[in-house]
Length: 103
Picture 1 (cartoon, rainbow, N blue to C red):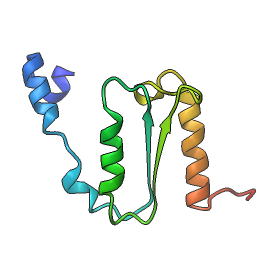
Picture 2 (picture 1 turned 135 degrees about the vertical axis):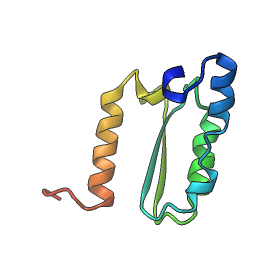
Picture 3 (picture 1 turned 30 degrees about the vertical axis):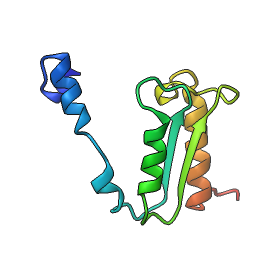
Picture 4 (picture 1 turned 180 degrees about the horizontal axis):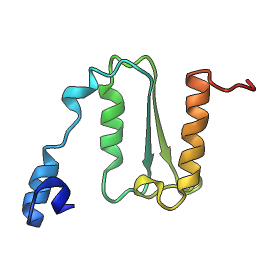
């Protein structure tokens, strides 16, 4: 990740990523928003996903899906069950944007 962000030490990386926040952009979201989060994500706390959902005040529809141990997909980016997340996103898009040709 250092080459992506232009950092060379762990400290620089953490300092840089601490500045990567969505607060200022969230109010500009004016389309439906789906946020997927793993309940056991050890990189990004669930509280940040909740904060993102709460901050999207101009979105006409915000859904926060937190995958549980029962669901699967509890790790960061649903790496423990990526197909579950993909299916969830596809179903959400079809429902929200009424793009299901059979529905």
